[in-house]
Image 1 (cartoon, rainbow, N blue to C red):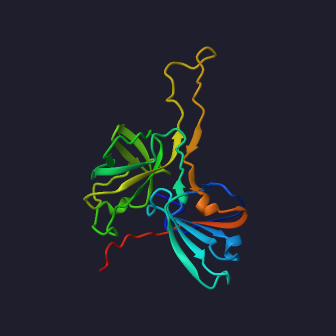
Image 2 (cartoon, rainbow, N blue to C red):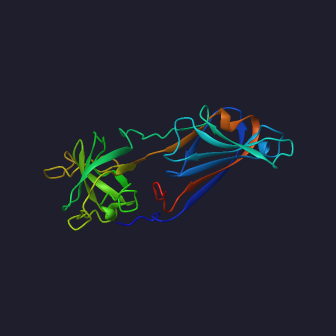
Image 3 (cartoon, rainbow, N blue to C red):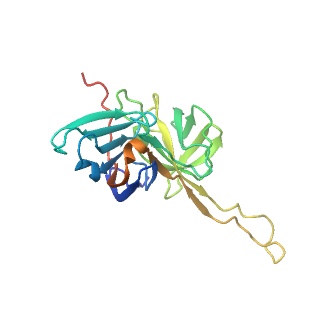
Length: 255
């Protein structure tokens, strides 16, 4: 169950000049946090929004956490704002897939391991998915610790079930001895791989050639739209940084 990025922190940066309008940033992977640093407003006079944060799974539509310069010293003191209009909105595209996330309603202890989703998943055989929000690190243990955070190839069994395979070897995942599933969990669709047709029957010949469907790779495009509250004025200079956490734990209420 090889995953080159499991447990690794990823970052990517961009430098851009605002057009004074909303802008959709294309991300190279599912980011956990994106920070827009407005260098123009950082050194400007009062009321400039110098920095805006987006957090995955922690933002309502159009929400942005912002740091605002509040005096002419341009950096000696700040306001902290929770902007809910023209902030950030997720703009992911699945390029033909029905959806890219499904909630888990059951996981079997079997060979192969079968995942059941709470609604129609819309996935296709040979797509790649990542299983998240399981294991003992959740506020309440959810079981299937061995699946947490890993990527799998799937074989669709029905509109709400699919089995798991190793994405490198194609071996079935045997969950017979895994920790029993209790509740919860999510499946994130990471790509759509369309495989060749099954070999045709009969003898190949000039009149009966083998014509497989061309292989194609159809990934999800992760996008984040920064609204006018973030992009501010025309010609403002930005340095943007996206982060993918190597590990992210929900510790719940620690009181």
